[in-house]
Image 1 (cartoon, rainbow, N blue to C red):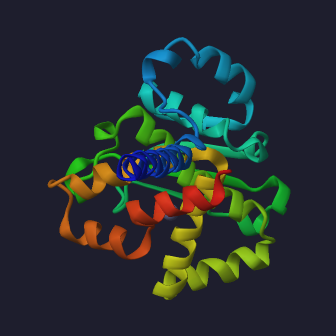
Image 2 (cartoon, rainbow, N blue to C red):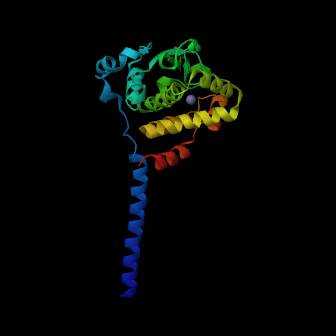
Image 3 (cartoon, helix red, strand yellow):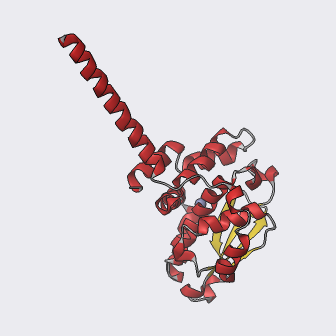
Length: 232
Ligand SMILES: [Zn+2]
């Protein structure tokens, strides 16, 4: 009888623990936004362009990327009135964000920013079109984190930051990991995780780019940990 009762209690305990673990791990993921599906946003472009297009210039025809840009932008209300453009360019990363060349001649509040998207797969093996819509939202969310950071810096602070970023690997890592964390805090952890997992498992990516991302950005495990710590 006692043995039976003990077994019953033990089973209940196991159930409780596994339930709470399951709940906990679900909680970690579900604290973030749902997976974004392109089909759900197919008709949304006119709406987004009307509401956000005044300060945003997307010089790319790709409708999927345009929509991913606006869906990510909804996670950054701070950037609604910030002027920025998106262009295709042959670059060594998948995407990059920077202030426009003559930023020193503008006041901080009038500054403009550019996001460049790598236009060729041959460059590093990573092509933006290969990313799912959900992953593109996360990737752009990472670039928005950079722009948010830049937009909070004075011209002098930005100049100091750029010189450190290009000359110090430690500063590069700190900046890139922080951009990932900011994207997670803006509710894009799940999107970032999907893109990073895709990247880690994509055999076509060049070794140099693969190592760079592993060294300087959050790993999938770190993203999950950050999500658990930051999304409650
Ligand atoms: Zn970055």
